[in-house]
Image (cartoon, rainbow, N blue to C red; front, top):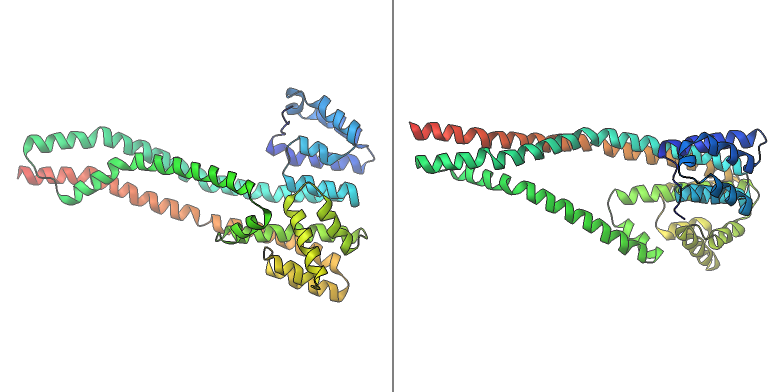
Length: 345
């Protein structure tokens, strides 16, 4: 059966209401039954019965959010909360995470929507110029025996092929991304980590995201009295995330070889450098759970700020490129007129 999919804007609202109801003493079954009546998408997609069936058969919220196609990080966090700690705390933290992601998405959309519209208008204008104005000028040149300047020939040639070139580049980019995606999902986790480490800027995002995940999970487990070796076993035994399984196996093997936890994590070469400092300091002060919790909050905020910082460069670059192209297009229209005037003289 095809997975239901709560609209993005309602994913946060669904979890928020669910958290409130659980805090008020409602059971998971009662909460799901009431919530499915509050979201028209669920009734329209006829998945209310399926959700109730999932709760009856499993009693697990992570199965519900998995069916509703929530991000994998949310499914894993809620799974850990159900199995090893406080599920409501996991829901609340998932809500915080989704809100941060939603803020970044809205910022990204706001950043690219106007440049995208302008590029579309420019593309249509360029196509119209290539099919109307430039051919007419060429006919006039031939009838009046006017020699076209080299600079005008170059500009006209470039802009005549530009729409087709942009379309080809776009299709090649899409094809490359698809091939890259299929290649990525088929390789080992260690090679995935190595692959992302070689991509500038993106490797910073990935390392901050992984640092957030690890610090959040370890803090959660330690606060619930789970010892370190058991946390690593949980990572290894869970089947929700292959990257977490690989991290657990790597840390376990490194610690068996005599490395400390900070050394083992550092050897993975896929985390923010400050994570090692927090773990070392937390172990010395016997406050590892608190330090990792505050680090996870800090890392999530740092990730959000870093993305927004880089987004601020998008509009100036795009608008600058558009301005250059528009001025060049203007010259293509004006220069032939000036050249015809000179030819008449």
